[in-house]
Length: 448
Image (cartoon, rainbow, N blue to C red; front, side, top):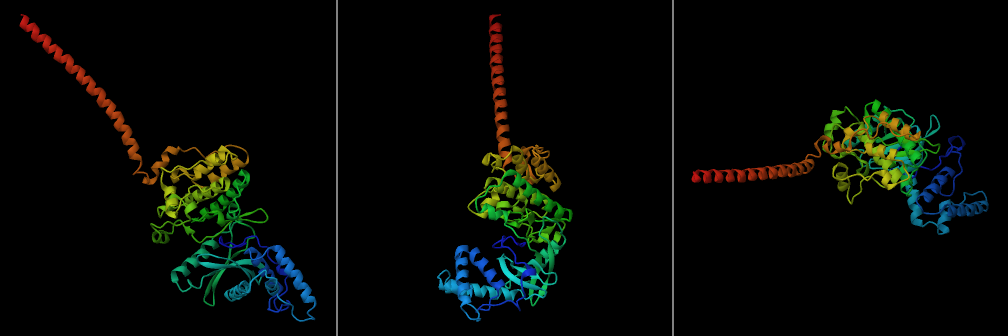
């Protein structure tokens, strides 16, 4: 499905453009719905849990019987049949029809025909559509009407499209087009069918080691491509990684991506925690302006940790608590191979290196990470992970200055106390010897 991470369903099969007749020649039911419209409504009904596939099929069979008795007049709509069978309520039918109408109005974009709504994010609504000129399925993201009058949001939306246009890689959802039509700003992307990693994690799936490493390595290849073009993603997480039906991997959603050398954006976001709490890097939590590819490596590490353990690296009751744990060197990461003893110690080392709180102790580049992933897939130990001492993590960029001295000072104080004690004992002993010597000398003088 499409690029957006927040789409409701990423496994919906697309209709074949070549076999679908145009809306002008497609028979319509009593409500003016074409077979294509009805097919999309069926999927929407099942996806939302309004009816089971069996209930939908039973209603379709009943509808076919009614249509055969209609003497050439438009047969009843599937929605009407489902309401009559008490599978849907009239209110649910009204909402479905209303959404269809709103979706059609929103996609009045020259050159594109709407198929169905895929999902809604914080900035835009995403639709599955057909690019008429080449008869292919695409995803179209449209800026929310509520934001379309705000110059800042328009700028951010356009910037996402411009950044996406710089990238072209098999493991990245690629940009196709962008523009404005009728006061609506749109961004056209490659349509990708398949579930996200989050979809699997939501079903409590724990990935096998080789599958997880293969997926993570594909994402690392995508990050390498972006890094070579001076870009960082800044929001790598399970819902932004799509697993395609043919076994491929696609990194999606460049809404938070930026150029590493973009000082204007860096300064405008200084001090802001940009990212998703469960997967955010320590430097993003601190709002640093010099965030680089190592932040993406950290987020990929957090994603991989979740994939093989079923748990996020750091939990908490609030986003701020979770983010504090990413930064605080006193909060130790539970090694992933302790939570899941089926994974190798080598993978555990790789993930711990990716999740080093001091970025100096992480992989420097995606190339190094990919090398270790290849070692794991070949059954070998990682070559890079574990080379840097974990004891240096607490010294990361000064974030531990408030913590480390206490331990060191206490140790020094104990050592000094022992030294002073010993010194005092020696002085006391010398004083006794000196006193005895003086008494002896006095007695000798008296005796003379």
